Length: 330
Image (cartoon, rainbow, N blue to C red; front, top):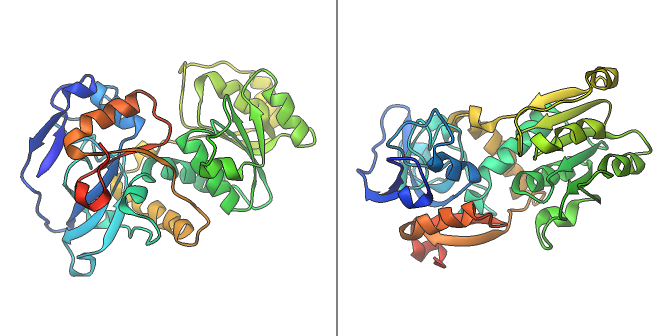
């Protein structure tokens, strides 16, 4: 099978397109023919050597959509999707024509999505669901402020929040791209600047948001705390700009703020499957919509796909393992 492989860390140019033996199923594991896989910023960081736990040589890639070709009889021919914090790091990932995953990792792909669309969901929607639903327990009628609403995770949080009946205040340096699902759902947009906290307070009758989902972190951390109402919940997933922060501890405990660190990378591909199944219902019911696919590439041009993500392409970038199936545009 064709596969990308990391043998040494560096720029996308260090990725090698090679032939590897096609994996075979065994007790507890199935084989998925990967139809499409997306590239996340974490995949680019993985190639660069950002993660100390990555074991080389390694096939990168976390998100995928495909068809089960070997494994339990009840799964043969099933269209599945998935993601995980182990695949691409400590076990071979999705940027190959086939992937071996535990049977417990199998989750049926929403019938409403193409393989390209399904492959673009994983990381962003899992970390969004984990922080919004599992940890913060956002409820109908509550208000959530989403810092970084124009990004992939922020857009996923916005969709999940609206599907749960919440009000969404988007906070970002730029409004979400016109035509994106998030742009149509945000109730109020607040520019990310020194007046953001004041504006959010005005929009919430001086109280603040019930939940703050900070998809930026680092430089935005103190602002995130300032947006939360008394006993509000703040979700942090990143540390853009700086990893060490300072804040007023007295204000923090007087406000009785709850702070949640949320790391989807701690969820292996089998751990992520129940969340993917829960998310699938939202797409099949029409409550959730797939993100915009900005560019698509064949596996033969996968290094160009990595360069596109490294360059900051807005929208999702996918690799199609068979150009004839999905219409390769590179």
